[in-house]
Length: 362
Ligand SMILES: Nc1nc2c(c(=O)[nH]1)N[C@H]1C(S)=C(S)[C@@H](COP(=O)(O)O)O[C@H]1N2
Ligand SMILES: [Mo]
Image (cartoon, rainbow, N blue to C red; front, side, top):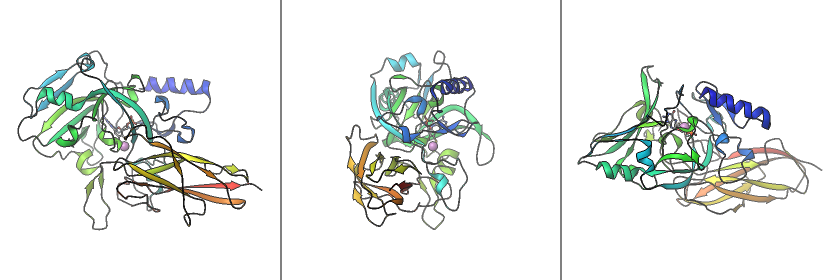
């Protein structure tokens, strides 16, 4: 992957600004420059990257295999060619890291200090996981399905070498929209995004979408690994029970204007993206007075139930000077973005409304 990064840097020199905003070099973690996001799909070289350990080299597609084992009638060992021979399925889905917005928590929490760019959208193509599980045959007593990537590194809990592995409840794993994806935006997966095969769990925070997938094991007991039980849990520290992090909370992002922008007195188009993994989007409201009053924004087409949706609002400022723009989304379950983060010890799911300060000229 070092070479992929070197290539990216080389390309950036030719094209101008670097396409990704680097959060850490090793392992490589970087945000998408979402203020420049124009179309629905994020170009692959602008799609955020989140890797716990990183890989020196992505597994070669030639000798790579996917092993399916555990509580199944027929264990399988599949090559990429085997998977390409199964019925193909594609869908557009937004992926957001559960740590997106962690930087804004008060008091601060440990972990990658993401601003708001750990979210991107792609068209994923592959095979339904359910298709492969049906070929293996689920045996009696199955409860969960465990997914492991080839990447290894020190456990954040005790430093022991572990793999990145996570499970899904059987019912979720059997949903036909959960994909074993080999392509992204019409091209084979790149090393950073999990080549040659990754899981894509639409609607869930990104940690569920295991990259560099090499093994699937059907389990009869709940998985309690580090990235399941110690990480990716909401620990509010206020007496509320500890809960697993699952679907993406409703959130609107303001792409334009950007912080510090100078806006003409006639106003500007305020626009961005809105998504929710928990329930369909119900609406986006904008405030230009720090949250005193709110007006409805216009929603663009819903292209996929799993993809973000464009929104916009034609803003006509009532006075010159400093303004704080806010955008707040609601979903059909009645959930709305909070004005302040729902703080938790590991800093997940911070979907608090974004504030963008701008200056309106005379
Ligand atoms: N094998 C493996 N899969 C992984 C990870 C990882 O570190 N290793 N990170 C997860 C997390 S936390 C996120 S947010 C998504 C990021 O996917 P992306 O890098 O393609 O954006 O991958 C998930 N899958
Ligand atoms: Mo993540």
